[in-house]
Length: 253
Ligand SMILES: [Zn+2]
Ligand SMILES: [Zn+2]
Image 1 (spheres, rainbow, N blue to C red):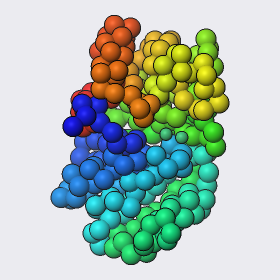
Image 2: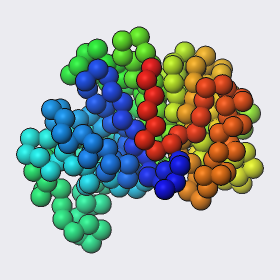
Image 3: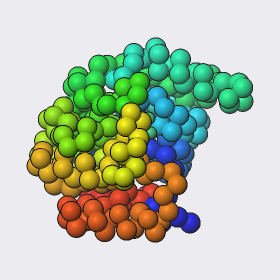
């Protein structure tokens, strides 16, 4: 068992009784299992972009095995029809044995433009978005609910020595930011254009925007628990209360 976990991007946000999902990576499989007994059967999932590590859990989302369940997928980097075509391609032979048609529950698609504010049925939940710097584009999200704010900023590349003002504006004064911390500073210098960032750049960005706490996310895939633990200590020293994401971690705001 790894202390930090090995699943790809998937985050659950609870606003009161309502569950919102961010990205459908392999972590969506254990999340789906934990949600299947809930009364809620209509889920909003905000997708940062269509890379496989953010989609590969969709066909294992247990509530879709129920008749009346709906998974509504929102995407800001391409229109809804194009997201549908990406998912249909992934969930069909030869990449997968069956198509989405066999699920009793259904997928729905909503396209928007990164930068738009999104309206959910529950009007107490406010969702704002911005464009991220990633190959093929990606979207960052901010969720405001009852005076608390949370942001999900992953799969984005910074410019060394600069604060991304678009992101800084979105995350301003928020309580918690999940931030793409894939690379170390040394690795980053050799991977310009790969579309990822460092925890150090995240701290600069969060401090400049008055953010209270940062969670480092999207760990580089070969990183060991020992390496992550060492980075965790450095991050906590640089921005107290911040840490590297661990699978199953729960934070109450
Ligand atoms: Zn990506
Ligand atoms: Zn990714």
